[in-house]
Length: 498
Image 1 (tube, rainbow, N blue to C red):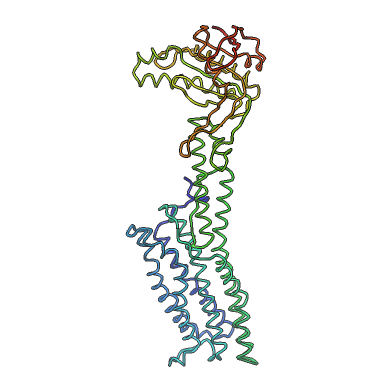
Image 2 (cartoon, rainbow, N blue to C red; image 1 turned 30 degrees about the vertical axis):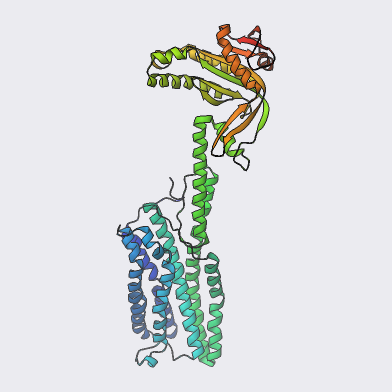
């Protein structure tokens, strides 16, 4: 089975877990960039040591400790210490819980950084004590940015983690409580209004030189943060869509072995799960078609699967067809001399020689009847010049059997009866047991004609309807015969040598 549409590089478990801590460290990296830019713009490099220490304490140490406990269940599963059912909820909710952990540590960090004196601390703050509108806006927007950022960063990480677990452990998410549209809506609304909220708060709170300074800080922060936000939102949301698209293209090309990892708890994850179910159904359908084809021929299998009514039955088809019955001469005596396993070997060798000839000329083996078979030409598989095809197939069958002995050097002679007439292809049986077959008086006549070979000492007998339909001249008229179960006499012809 193809696990996914991409190559599956080997990744050490430690590296998989380590990527989560790197993901949780993204807000710290952005905060460092913002601090350096701010210090450079205002030439306040003395504020860097204190503020870097604060950031490291909250966004590295505090968030790192929280990350350890959040990733611990997944670590235990990878180590074989827990089942997937035990950790599936923790895995599914990893982005939300990581975002909550970020909020818990980011809000007090910003408050401490902006209002150190109100906490009785004498440290170099980034700015003068802000007015309340600016303070509230900075807390809301700053916290919202980092919460959303870490949510999408961890979502992108979760996509890779779930893909890794799918490839290595063959497990997939089955809990779907998130909403794709909610994620996109919140992200778009935040991106649209974050800068407006900050600038509005600056205008309400300040004037003059400080207004310019505060607005500049907010604009720079927005410019720095926006590319990170866009990158991770795109990374988190686009990869599942692209993976699903590749999977659909593989299925369209006929690959029913592809399976996709389910990497989120929203509609996209649910769609990936449904995709796997769909492909599983298509794969089973192909298996059934192939399996049916081994028993009733590919064409009958195709009719059963593709030409059904709502009750699951093949739609009845009435047409003219040529029917063939075969029977092995002296098979009863042969069965008495050979062991059952040897009889089975002889039958398989016989059918191995006969069936390919019938199929090569457009015939369909409808059923095996003891040591013989029943085949049809032109139903359910269309066959042009079906009567001529049936006669040619019958002659080639005799030639194939005459060429060399079969299993265990057993020489077999077979008798063949052919008849052409109007028949109907139907599904018969009960609700839980169905069989596709061909019915009609023409079928009964073909079966009786095959039995008449013993009376005439022939190997191939065909009715006049078959000979005329085939336009065959290599046939000897033997006369009228009374066919049991048929009202009128039937004219029969010998085909080929006796």
